[in-house]
Length: 162
Image 1 (cartoon, rainbow, N blue to C red):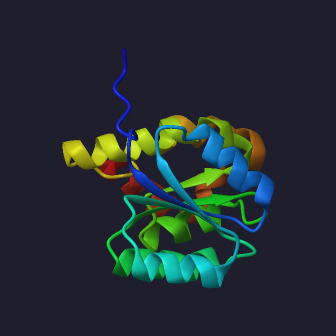
Image 2 (image 1 turned 90 degrees about the vertical axis):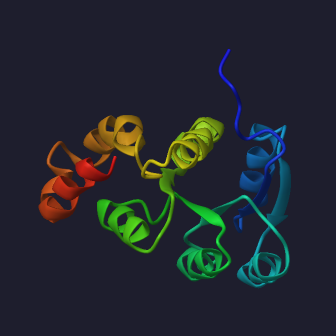
């Protein structure tokens, strides 16, 4: 049986869609989840409370600004998106310090992705170490097989960080 590194972790989930918040909470049953529906409430929580991980929507709650705050507070942050889904935003998220970039289409596997991140931290690996394994075929289908060509240099280096 695989060990769930998420058990008892405190997770901030931020999204302006209440149904997404509720789904995430249900998908992380052994976590202490705290929900925020707006930038202001998420900002307050990040600045005043402890979290192991923050799952941040990009659109609707200014996820990149929240990512900046999470980084300053040493909170591992994951970007979750539907409307901002693009290879460019994936690269931006990585460069700005996100631990992962997860399409909302893959929301139901959130526990697997968060476990990947915690395992990477435990082993001293890049937090993105399994990202290409998890999402390359999804991106191939969504953006075409040459989606990495727009930022070849980044993706060539990326494979060394895994």
